[in-house]
Length: 246
Image 1 (cartoon, rainbow, N blue to C red):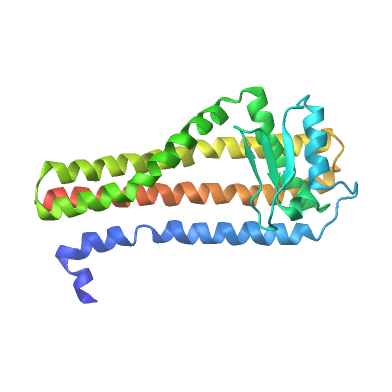
Image 2: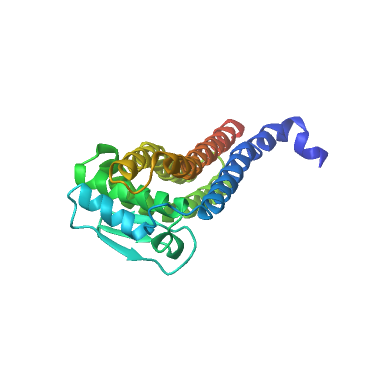
């Protein structure tokens, strides 16, 4: 174990543990969103509306009639809005649930549909980045592995380093995607909370519970960004150290 803290390996050791704060933050954020959802899943809305009914009511209030609401195939929190198909998919517990947690999540996903309908710029950017990010993410690890092998086989070689930095650039796109996601998610929650009140789906007291659920959910996106930035930093440091050693 002592070898990891020897002068020649210390920088690599520090680089290896750089992700720990981000991972801990992500675990706390995930636990928080699950805790808040379970808490407010037990609090039923006074209006008795289901998540699906709330989503439909908000869409109609905004004059949006080309978005479909469908029920997912799981109770897990896999709720999402697909801007390409214009479909809001709600998990079972959100689609049929009448709790504060369920209608809060449903309203949030409806907020994304409203963003698209209103031409919200960050939403457009995220949608464009999503396809590129998903495509390039498939090549990140193959590029990095090939680059490392070539760099070790041909010390100081240009080809290996080229593969490495292209891989880092591809990973950087996913970090950019996480960054653009933040304003999109926070804005969707802000729209949701306002519309829940203006459409009469909840009262002022109930919206506080919805806000807690959505705020904790938003922190998971912050955590994802932090982890992505630290991972990117770790890659960059590794390759800079490799270049220096060569």
